[in-house]
Amino acid sequence: MLAFYNEQHGQHRGRFEMFRGEMVPCFEKPERADLVLAEFARRGLGRIVTPHGVPLVSLERIHTPRYLHFLRNAWSEWIALDPANAGKDAFPAVWPVRSLRDDIEPENFCARMGLYSMDSGTPLTAGTWIAAKTGADCAVNAAHALHLGERGTFALTRPPGHHAGADFFGGYCFLNNAALAAQHLLDDGAKQVAILDIDYHHGNGTQSIFYGRDDVLFVSIHGDPLTEFPFYLGHADETGKGAGLGYNMNLPLAAGATPAQWFAALETACIRIGSYAPDALVVSLGVDTWAGDPISRFALQSADFLRIGERIGYLGLPTAFVFEGGYAVDEIGINVANVLEGFETTA
Image (tube, rainbow, N blue to C red; front, side, top):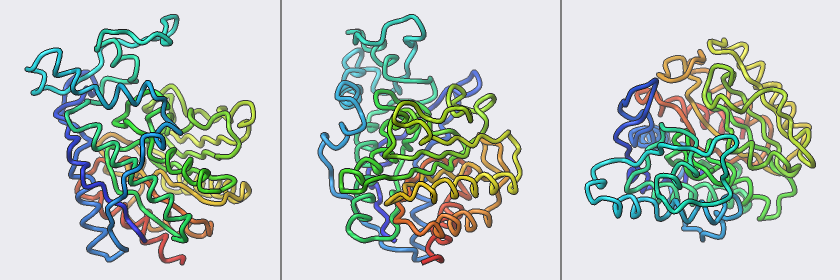
């Protein structure tokens, strides 16, 4: 397996995030990717390579130019407001909620930051753009390697991506790596692609990007949005619209769901993907479904992640895995590597 590693991911290192009413140290931190890299190498799961840079036009296949322009320049604008801001992360403070306009971009930086964000838990730092852009490079390279004949690839990057929409960031995500990978597969000649999101939190950004399309099937297993982030998307009745009707499947599970319940949902997801018969598969690989994760409430054990990889492997599809969530840092490398090893055993 080829693993495309984001050597710049550590440039994004948030100091704090807003969590349950107080500022706490960030759960999404560089050690997450470092431990996965170490375990991948220790097991000899494949070759670790540096991605080639991709042009901004590739990002514009998913994200709006206006949003990308903001993200590229946000830190310099933040510093221009006050040089002392160099010692602080940038957070949004206002948002254009219902009845307010979002079609006009304000001149005020804080207002624009709110325009392009969905929460107050995703700090923007000095290195956010370079880390996110190089992560997108990893995802596009992982997709392109499937086109060149690889059976399985891995985009080992952070910050994660599946909460990022076409024109907003949030949920620790800035660029939607899974969506970029899927779109690149289509641009490489695939007729249809499936995305399987197994992160604990619903991939609201990915769903919204492809919701009206039938060339990308999106299937997600996640915590019920009635109680779990991102709250406002991910219900079972969201099945697509227009040409995309029937090409979106959400399988929400109650907090505390058992491994048996989770694997039943995975089987439903795999049957749907099999019936769609895609040319390739992208997996949003979050391992925050592990029982000890600090901000999630499922009960999977480390051995279960081997089973997950095996089941995905038995779909028999060229598959790009894209690293998403998982915040129990000591165990994260084991759990991610178990998925990839399980996949590889089906070769």
